[in-house]
Length: 246
Image (cartoon, rainbow, N blue to C red; front, side):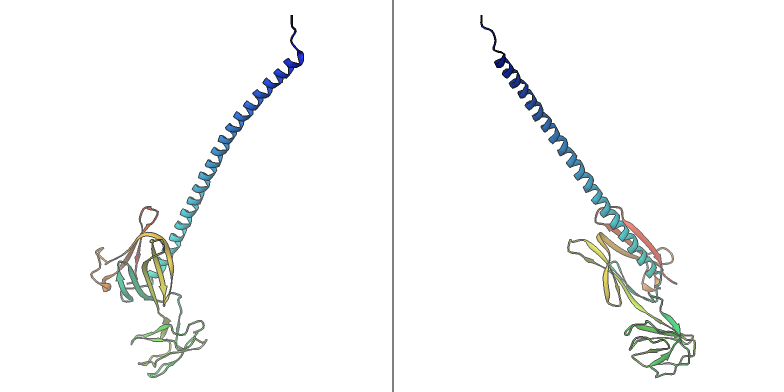
């Protein structure tokens, strides 16, 4: 009767045990790979969502700030200072930076040097308006304003007493254009210098209303300006209604 060889039996047990450990290891690796892939996918989704949320928040912040600028500046306009009122373009005159002063002496017809309380910081070439009870006239600054004097490019046509008001009159333009991605932009231009106010829009529309809540029959009837913006992301239309000065 043959007896089993203990060494052969031991080698067989070791082989069987090693095979079971390798199989379990392979299964564990496969499960780990699936778990890792799922975790990476979840991380990518979370990151993509965070990027989209950040982009949306940035766009909303830019729109909010842009609309605040629009409201503040349009409130400075009046039906008498509106130059253009179209669905895609609004142009008006206003003293955007509140640069105003008064004359410190009388002004005679033909003068180009105007004595003022403070003309510091007034840029050359800016249009300025002199106004008194007798009327108003517009000129341009021939040189940067000085502390006590403004130099005009053309002579004053009338006579004005001391205390006559004089202020800068900027030309403000809001208009639309397409960007490189075929999205609409709301542009802002002050005296020829233009920049993007609000970007990535699907549509922009300006409408003009009179004091009775009807579409204004002409620029002289405009009392309210309504701006409607539809973001390119397809969100709800944002509307701002601004009353101009009477």
